Image (cartoon, rainbow, N blue to C red; front, side, top):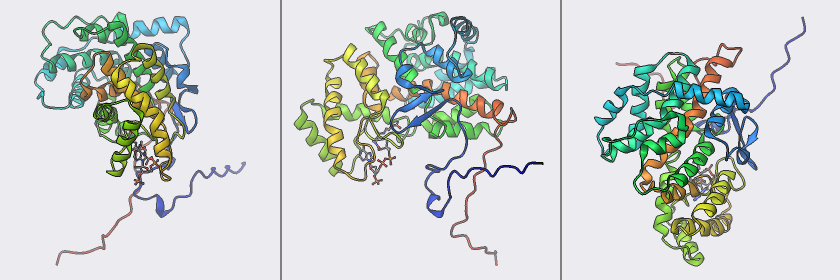
Length: 391
Ligand code: AMX
């Protein structure tokens, strides 16, 4: 019998890797997406800027089935999503009992958990696609109940498509529905997935490794996303832009230098993996030039994009002084009528339910010839714990 080939070494683990949040430590493979320092995120090999204008439904299909749908597949998939989109009444009932002081992400987690309690089938792909199909109505309920507009919410019309149906149910007074739909479609596609190791995705896969279910795993993932260092950065970013309040280059530069001197982050810049401007930032700047070139927040982020890389570039320890995905998303959402930045992370969460769902399906039902990845169990080394006994 031929000897087994020696596995390729990927990383020599040293003590310097301990307590670094697994940064850079290879733990698995990912079939949905990858991130490169120069090109940013790619879904199943496609650079994100080639996908940004596609229908979100086609990108959901891509992440799940690993190829772009043919016209027939696309039509069948849309019908399939429509057939999965009936939201049980208990979701609205439970959300109506939520404290309004809570953050919208609290509501998103509770909405998903309630949906799971009602419709969980314990079949990975079925549950993941059912969740995707129900997300527009959960999102609309979160807005309308919190805003005291539940009465009169239009009936869900899933045949409109995921985003258009949300916009229809939200029925935002005074909003330009075309622009709102356009911004949200691009937002969803750009945020659906980001490799295997980002915290919310990793958390969701770790929970699912206990053979929990998609809904419970997704709630854990959403709670990971809620943190200000992860998904809530888009909320902080618009708040930061509004604090600047001017698009004058000199004034912006002064503001940025003062923030740095006060040891505060310059939101919307920097990245753990990318070493150029995030293509997702460039896509959203292009969209902003199209729909809101004269918006006051947009003018500020345009100036920030010019000024900040030069200022951060003077600081040696900063690996990437360029704009990241969060620089423009809040400004665009604000422009199309979603003026409360507290909600921005729920849109991130909505988008990520697709990528996280697809990755969980891969880890549970496809990898290791369908056996799935075993229960997550990394090793921790005892610290300051000499063996001792009660006297
Ligand atoms: N403003 C101020 N300081 C920054 C900075 C920024 N935009 N980007 C990096 N730095 C600092 C780091 O805090 C770190 O300082 P320390 O050594 O004193 O702790 C040092 O520069 C080196 O950091 P790095 O290796 O370049 O990046 P990182 O992987 O540690 O962090 C990120 C990446 C995104 C957290 C960081 O760039 C940052 O805080 N940016 C501002 C907040 C932001 O926009 N977050 C959203 C990121 C996109 C996302 O993931 N959603």
